[in-house]
Length: 442
Image (cartoon, rainbow, N blue to C red; front, side, top):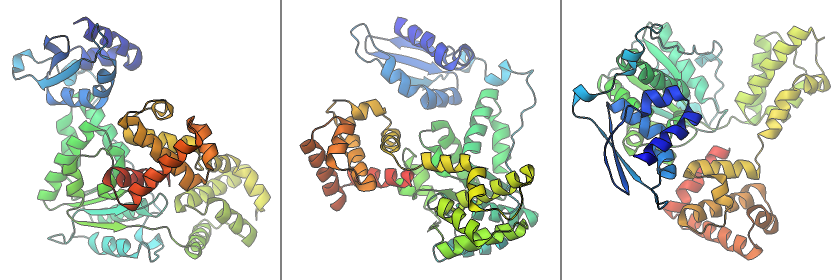
């Protein structure tokens, strides 16, 4: 089929010829007509890779002579004799397959965690659960923590992993990005059995930032089976995210339901006195003089997030040591020393561009689609939500929002009122995405 061949050639420039040769060309065209293309994959992992990396592209780009979309149907071949060589066979001379896991930070222990009313319940539950031997049966499994960045979720997960590891248990702590990278690595090298052994022969699995699994079909498939194996065997699962399970976008319902099987607990931002205590505690551990003016400067500049605050202090410690800067530091010298981090904070502040990007990512469309003249439901609702967020979060006047979206004053007012009406009445198709997007912006 010429349209399929042209698509493959176009992807060589995007994905690289090697990737196309390994993953796409082995797909067999079983039949086709003017509006349909039927493909067969050699195995389920090739099919999963296609769904995760290619499905969306092919639906947009593959068209017939009349410029109408061609629908692609994918199945896994039932005849193993016709299956294409697996990536493992093609790479038998490659280096031994190994998975690298990040080590929890040394300072992230239960003893160094600062509790506050917003995280005390999560702290107490993990402290009671993460002991050797693990309680049997586990009262709550999985344990799911949610909250904004910088509220201590990662600290608690690493603290729990460290406590269990010191008790002689087999433990894995992984950011969700690492789990995803390991899935891709294992698929490419045909080493899924080694991957499964690594993740399933443990007493406890801690996965940080689970929302990263969004839109990653192969990752979600593997995590589903990993979760089931560990849960059935009575092993501990601890997960964290910036969102509640029901607010996770583009995560399979069967996973979301499992995330809610145990207990879901919030981690809220610690209050200013605790932020101050955290900073003083870390400075004392490093024997770093932190006088009141410098303390106030750091809290004012980075105090919106414990993560950012600790990163700033650690950068200050390292840079003053390397530069042999005289102590104690003044706020002015600290500002100069941390100029790049301060600039990064400024760039990370909420802007219309950031709102547009997050809305587009949530709906799986382009920013250009939101700003276009299109009146389809696929673009109108995201556009209205973006307008509402610009009004609600940035306090932009209607005229400025109109200029941004190339819409007149009355259209902007009507759009924002419609979204607000949906929020007030808790209309699911408005309230749920609005809540999810708002949380990703924080």
